[in-house]
Image (cartoon, rainbow, N blue to C red):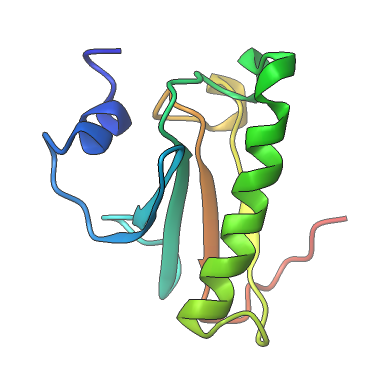
Length: 114
């Protein structure tokens, strides 16, 4: 997608503060952090949202969660805890239409999700 913000970051057209990168996944610090630690994890393949996920891409989502766990360990917040969220579509609060996962950490997050 030529007008996708995250695709431009993947291509290096827009700079980012990378935390992790491999052939399928990129993770970088959010430029408007909601918590002291706010990292975005995205597939390099453009997938609009979880609602657009194809069966053959399900393994990639599992790999993303493994990467999230690795980042939490390497960045030193795994023991204290963190939250992982993804927004799906306009009504779900998604503002960049490229599947992405927010890692939120660095403070107690308050309201517990049930």
